[in-house]
Length: 302
Image (tube, rainbow, N blue to C red; front, side, top):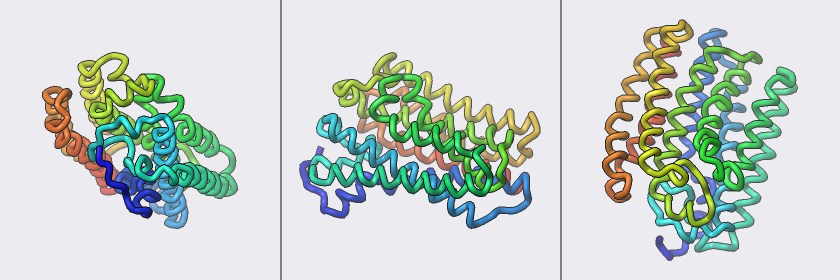
């Protein structure tokens, strides 16, 4: 891990993990697609508010995770890769730790404000999504990373059902079977993304008391579960088409899922060789963007 001290701006912006925020518009777009399919239109102001809420949620969990990892000492143990679970900005700038905490709290306030607007518009039916999202944000690092099952699915829950279904509800005021089925695609893919990203940080995570899946059950089990997650995501698309909510055009999402075949093989082959694994970590990021985006296009065009 480098000892070069980041500049002040990177120490402030680093905990936000700005390059990783691209998943938010991907998932919000998927919710917008299901709402457009069912209503024939989009309220662009509400869509922007939903996007703001999604960004606040993601930045908030990133900043609080950064703060907790610094306080636990994990940041000092992690061998940094482009896909590590933290930016590494705080060890060189310990005075900015409180700033990361403040960023996380401010994002929770923004998320609450956005939720309040939608409650005033649509009523209290959307509140459970916001409350569950806030719980995931606050508890992810200190609590959920101690449970293999909760740690595995919490990221996917946040980006999948909470963000996709939440966007759909924000735009329509109703829940939707189509949006729920669509949300399972990012649920499984993004759970797989975080699972694969844990391989390089395995030793450091174990040293600070985390108990995610590959710590408790081993890397071989992690590879098997990763493959199941990618397969489950593809099966959701096929089910959506067979059951009726999706048109045949939704099957173009499977072209994105093809990336998962090579990625899972690379993970199996290089799970203990982090330098060789890094290119496959990149492909995994591509997979988690491509498949939901193609599904979004399929829904809009169908």
